Image 1 (cartoon, helix red, strand yellow):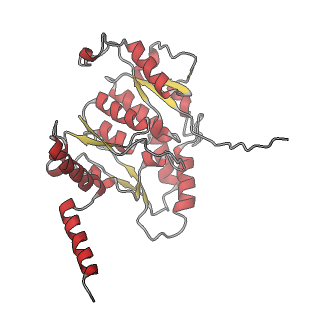
Image 2 (cartoon, helix red, strand yellow):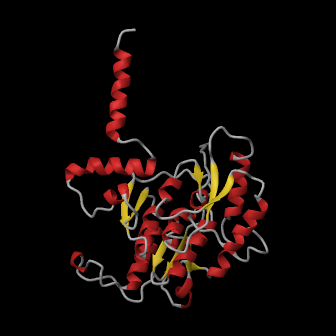
Image 3 (cartoon, one colour):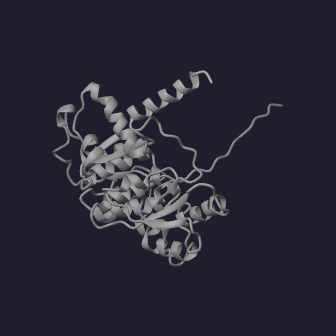
Length: 306
């Protein structure tokens, strides 16, 4: 008799949000809903255009795809379990094949009645599990969970970086976790958001992938973007949803390394400088020259006879 082993693993449901890029409130709502659900970091935001943008590079293809073709391409690529039209798209007809369509208001339901969403696992359940396993006892490091208070300016971009929590959910979190010292709030701005991206800082978007063992498909990718462009923000979100490790470089960043990184083009000889500037900005690493000189001195000391 033959024997075998079957491994059963639980995965989050994948949801595609149909959003009109011109509807900034709809894009923000899609980010909110994704942030609240387990695995939401990998939920795509599918642009639903009324007309294909003329700025698309038509010289690379024989003809521009229709809005319906764009939606079909995204859905075929991400293969979601559910499709949720959001904002202005909620009242439009869409061709999504045989996929199930769920109304925006039915996805998580009324959080004032229950903190558990109707579909999937919710952020409050994730936070409760995270706090029980990681914050129950005093730690020797600075691990913390930080909920962002987003400003009006650059709100959509910062939401795509840190996530955005529905108001009703935030009230529940404030009430139920008020005594957990490691759960705090921060006020990110486009000038300082990179300072809040350290590995010991768990913000809502990172919390949405708690307990998932997914690894990036490739090394870090720089994405120079316009923080005021909903289309750039959607592209940044979807690159990450596809499994890439993406570092956003908003052209609105002020001074210093931001100006180096937001240059439109680089010569081959400048790539090492670009990589060095990126690591200083996002990983808080020292300048490569200073680091290599310090390493050389360490090796020299070791070689010297005692």
